[in-house]
Image (spheres, rainbow, N blue to C red):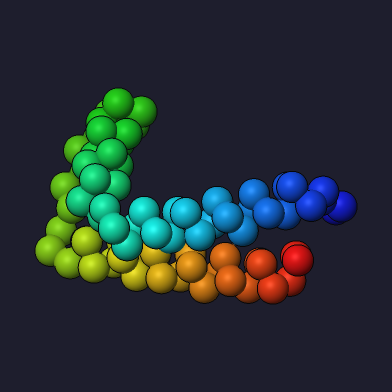
Length: 74
């Protein structure tokens, strides 16, 4: 699959942005997940103890993936 330079930049930048959001506002993301589960799936989602820590860990993973993508795609 051939990506344009703009598409490659958007891919790693979007991944990095997602990582930063996961690190900075995990509570907001969990609240949005709760709403999404309620509206789209008609189920209750209740974050457990440690959920914010796990969301932040996902953010670190996203930042690592973004760094790898930037290295590979640029």
